[in-house]
Length: 281
Image (tube, rainbow, N blue to C red; front, side, top):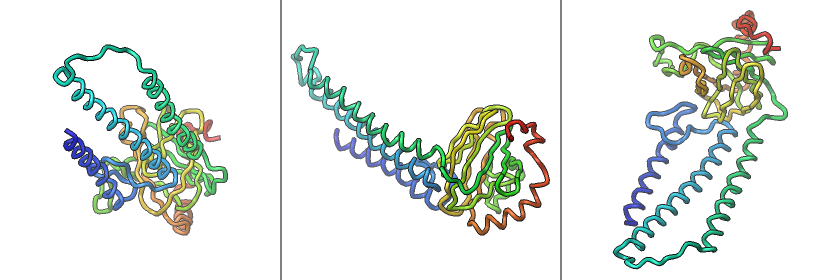
């Protein structure tokens, strides 16, 4: 009975580990048959993965312990092996153990959890700010530190996807978000109509976009690449069609993009046009 159990656990470990190695060849995109999380592209994601791994150790330990305990009970106390069962209802030592041990486990989980929540909340000295606005059903972006560059970002329809250019169905957008690497970026996230949620798994971001308020978080992207995300709040019939596409570039390339984007995007004020003036103030 024990050998099949260990064989099952070893097989499960293989399936959980292989997708993680495969994901390292890509940046910020889900992979077919992927079970593990996407490769971390920011310190926030790295901390989240570390916390997830801690929880996996605890959960796996509890699961294996309970399974072995059940197997022991079935083999040791079945009718054939134990024809005359003892009659008792209390065991003080066991009752103390099953009360104290869960409390210790919760403390082990709570301490790093609170530290992680504090780390993810905000950065004290951001180097730039990106304002993100959720609409039905697309995103609006504004760079207040770069002459108010602002634009709307829509999903590219299926019949216009250019696979040769690396575009991905349901994830690529017409106007991409360009951000510099190795930069502490403050993210201000709001909405103009209903609840949305701006989520980029590889960067460890998932923040609600609420009408009438700004929710704040931050990101520091480790290396250049393309990072994808989606709206993670059920916001209406086209909820699945408002993706996020971020192109992380070097600081030098970001400044070049800013100069070109000033001419392309600064001429319009999409926030005012979309009756967003009250929240944009």
